[in-house]
Length: 189
Image 1 (cartoon, helix red, strand yellow):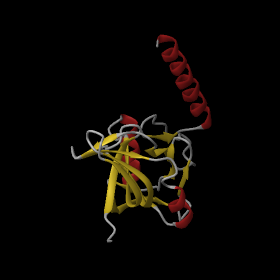
Image 2 (tube, one colour):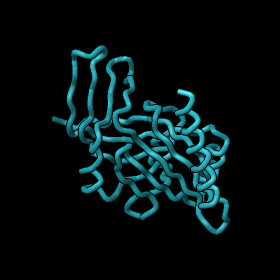
Image 3 (cartoon, one colour):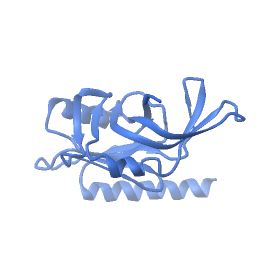
Image 4 (cartoon, helix red, strand yellow):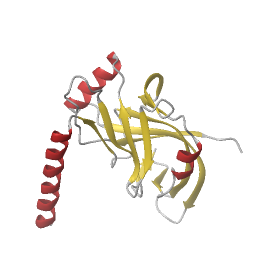
């Protein structure tokens, strides 16, 4: 059976930038979130199962970070050490050191403004299950062969997050603010 190349797009949020001039801009967040149901082209719903990226992260040491899925717009690469990927209980986490290029600087400005706040990933499905009794049918992706993640403007999955990283001091402030907001939301429920 021939492999079918697929791409999924997801939201990224919580933007932070590194303000020190001697340090490169960094983006971090989640390129995919587990068990987050999304509709694919009004044909079926889809979720990504925990562990779906485990094998590909072991097997592939050359995954790229792109802008808008364009292979002409490489932002980082695991092989070069400018992109790191890991899987945790939430999903596919990434840390990306942006290059000092016009594209990356423009992207950082767009992220700061909130114009670009989503992420996507390109993959081949290596294991999936289907529930045709669900309406619409539900596809669960159990394992993928990942070849890229992308910062993009249109998502398929709404639950991902990414951030430009400013400094540790600002990161701590933002973390405290997020924690406080979560506590307030819990009280209001």
